[in-house]
Amino acid sequence: MAFSKQFRRLKIKESIRSRVNGTAEMPRLSVFRSNKQISVQVIDDVAGKTLVSASSLSKEIADFKGNKIQQAEKVGALVAKTAIDKGIKAVVFD
Figure 1: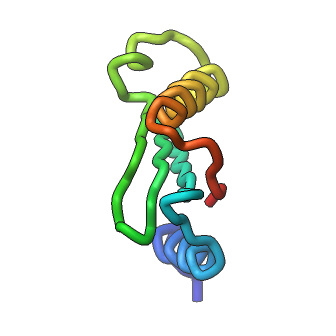
Figure 2: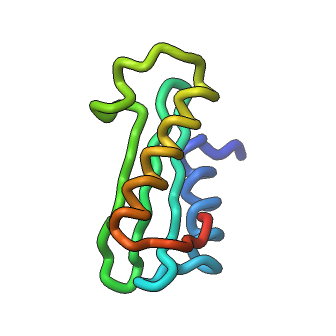
């Protein structure tokens, strides 16, 4: 029986989340990549809050004309800059 893409993605997510947890000292970095966009979040799982987020749809990056790799670099730089401004020095990659 073939599983749907969404069901498969959910199973992968559950598997990862059973092993990786973010705390206030070392939050979790979650990256979602669709065919057209990329979004990144820095999450504190203990408090259940998103500390920093960035996306290729955000104001700073939306008018940037470049390929997907260049957009991903811009999103990474933006989320890193905002995280450092909020005092986050280390993350756990999800």
